[in-house]
Every structure is written in structure tokens, then in C-alpha cells.
Length: 246
Figure 1 (cartoon, one colour):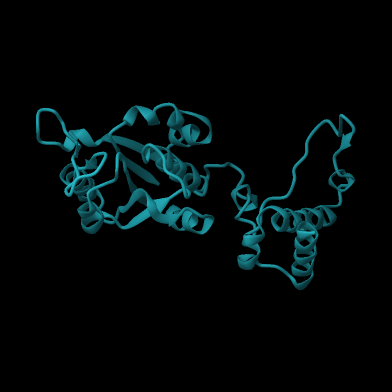
Figure 2 (tube, helix red, strand yellow; figure 1 turned 120 degrees about the vertical axis):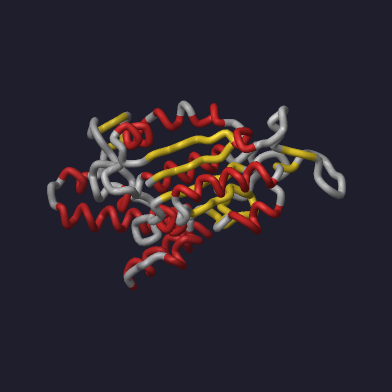
């Protein structure tokens, strides 16, 4: 997977892209992350990337020309590159969308900023707008890092253990993940569940699945409508939901 990020603040990516799993994946050549300064595609001596909005109003708007030039130059290298604009008006980044984006061989991510991007950028070069939540951030750099982090974990080899990503929250048939424990067995009067130390893998799997259903019903009951559940699991979820409402 190749990521091309277009931003006016490239320094925000230096630390995150060198750290943890993402940094190791880059070092191993499993993914490539190239951060580009949009100012490099401006044509004035001040390297201007924003201007006052037509019609008046507070704030500034990102100019269309530098962004479009940047995207078109990058697409000459790979015409099939998928162009994503980070925007609070975009499609909410859920696991299904992450998995879909992870199938692309190359993503060009445009980081919105200020009051937004000239609408003609959307009309001319953007394939998809993506939001990471119903709130406003200073810019699109954190959403871009979120997209890179979430999608790169699904690239083969990035996590090491092939099954790890599929056992995470939202990847497990639409449910939240189950509780996890490690040493020590007892901590301040709280013990790890005995079933996890039983060595009975079938029982452990059943316990984890039940806990995932319970946790989802308690914390994110909205996810249950899209989850794949057996009749018994559906009944358990409904029972937990009723208890929470009492």
C-alpha cells in the first residue's frame, strides 16, 4: 500500500509515521507513506494555499488550483490511485469503510484545513470524502493519520500475526472485542476469569464470544442491528439491553 498525503503542515506527520506498528511497517517496506507539502504546487512567491471566501464570512478557504495540480501530478504516476478528502461532511470512518479502503493499492489523502476546501476540488479530483467523527478538528492531518493507521493494519504482514486484526473490535462480526487479561492472575482482589486459564480452547472461545455480545449490548447496542448473531446470542443481547434500561 502506498499513501500520498497532501497537507500544508507536513511536520505533523514526522513523529507518528516513525513510531509503533506504522513505523515498523514502513521500515519493512510493507507500506509507503509520502507526505507532500501543498505549497510546492502553488505559483506565487508567497506560496499561498488559501484565500477569502466568495460571498464573505469568517475564515479562509483552501484554494483549488494547488490541490488539483498536486493530485493530477501524483495520478500521472498511478492513474488508479484513490483520492480521499478528509472532511466533517464525509462518510463516517467505520470498519467496513476501512476494509474497503485497505483494498486499494494507493491512497491520495487530501488534508482539509481552515474553513474547508474549494468545492471544485471535490468535483474534479476527489473519489471519496471521509470523516472520523461528528466533531470539528483544526485540520485534516489527524484524520489522515487515522486512515493510515486503520487501513495499514489490514495490509498483510503489518501486524505479524495474521489473525490479530480480525479479532479486534468491529472486525468480529460487527461486535466489540471481549475483555483481555494477562499476568498477574490476581490483582487487588480481582482475578482473571478461570476459563482463560483452563486450557480448554473451545470453552475459551465460547466465553470470549459471549463477553463480546454482552459488552456490545451494554456499550454500543446500536451495533447489534448489523451484527451476525445466533438466536441464542440475540436473546442474550436483548436480555442485557433490558437490564441496562432498568
